[in-house]
Length: 98
Image 1: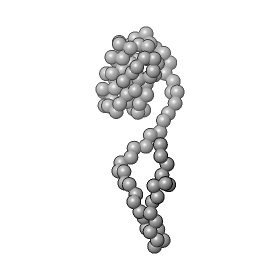
Image 2 (image 1 turned 90 degrees about the vertical axis):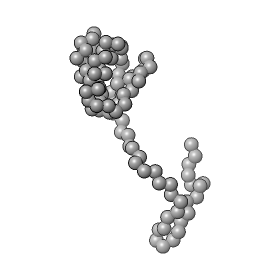
Image 3 (image 1 turned 135 degrees about the vertical axis):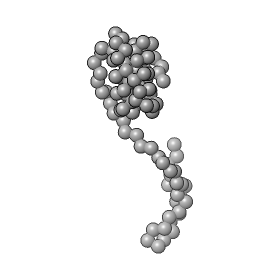
Image 4 (image 1 turned 180 degrees about the vertical axis):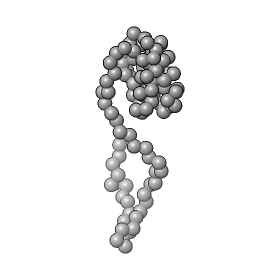
C-alpha cells in the first residue's frame, strides 16, 4: 500500500511475490521514496525493483531505520492472582486508560 509522497507499506508475502511486486513498482511508481515491512520482504522487493532497470532503480539503497515489533499470541485478562498465600484483586483504578 502506498499513498504519495509516503513510503510503501508491504504486508507479509512470499519472497517470489515480493520480487514480482518490486519489478512492477519499478514500471508503475518509479518515484517510490522507501519501503517499510519485514526485512526479508523488503530486501526481495528491492531486488525486484533493481531488476526492473527503471531510472529510479539505480538509486543507492540505504537503511534509514529499524523497528522491533512484538506479536501477542494469547491475551489473558487477569482477574485475580494468588501470591504468597494471599489473594490480590486487580483494581480497575490501577489500569491506565488511553
